[in-house]
Length: 357
Image 1 (tube, helix red, strand yellow):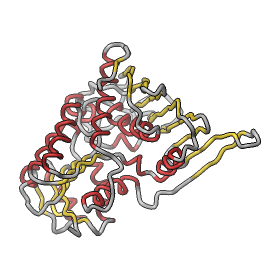
Image 2: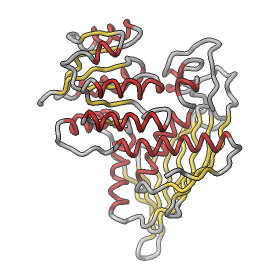
Image 3: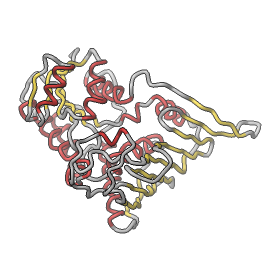
Image 4: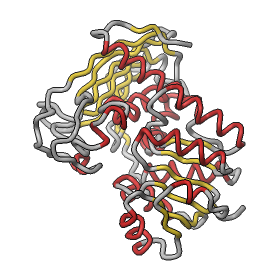
């Protein structure tokens, strides 16, 4: 196989902002099918980018297209597992937007279906592909940070509730608020940099304080379709702690809306030999030199190719047998277990939840 023929399911904000541009950069891919329940979205993408693509409203019709080698799922969260499993039954490789699924059971079913079909399953973990993330990962892998015993991570917005009243803010459809939307990114990146240690227990709290506010100051608020007088039964802030079996601790905070100075996202790592701060645009590394002087080393790698695109290129490389996946479905299952346990803790007033092996 020299060319991977792609079918995109769900032609909304994330497909147009990140996935379609990635395929346009990769000559090894050919988007031959587009599907959306709103046919106009698929027709617009066909007209603008993929003039020869077939257009569908029902994803099962797309899956029946024998020319499609792989599908890219960019739908609301609750459909991820359902569509992925049907795609594997149809003999397709699957790339899926985060989160993997909204329940642990569904994530496990997706993985089982991929094994039975002997096809590739990958879920978006674009922050792992950020150039500064990969530099920091190599730095850590060489032992230059020593033992990482404490980590902190956050993605905090002033006012950035996406698609308010629509599927983003409806728990039955999304699985939750910023914890499953942003936490899946930031907790995963931090956990990966730490070496994916085994979880011992978690504790967390969630809050919803801005359900009545329609103010927005973040571009992320434009994702999803807003629904006037729609549902918002998810949190707008989650905070908590993950305790690992090796004794290390990860603290996190994620919010769609907070009274803070500005939107920010970061990872902080405290190691015995060095510390680090990541904000996506650069790494700052803090250490003590042989003369006992405290030093700061700043590294700034500009992404020539965006991290979403690099993640999708890795998917294509894996299909073509040219690379190993930087993310595995087993890690995805573990992440959904972590998020589910945090929600369980929050539902019980922040009581610690022992992690299920």
